[in-house]
Image (cartoon, helix red, strand yellow):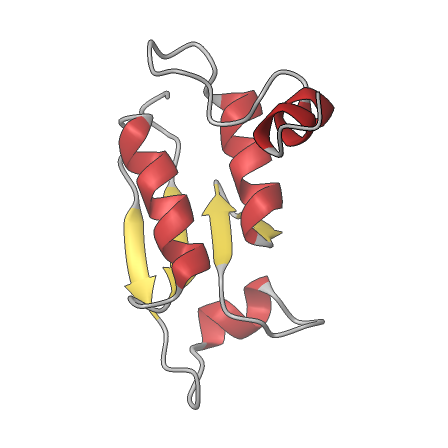
Length: 104
């Protein structure tokens, strides 16, 4: 990550989807600001970052907003894959589902 990368995560502390993204960011060793949102009184930054759905959990990278935890994980995986941390996502999603359910 370059010095000018600014990472922010807007969510709630107890949201499992936010926790999933926080774990991924910590595993990748990325510095980020976690901004706790009040579900009933959302911040102006949050409303600007996710104006359509207004759902809690927004990842902001250098001013660009990304929503939905799995999309955020994929974004992190693709943009910070050079770290020595194992991959966040399987190389072949189909294989992991089939092997995980022991259908093979």
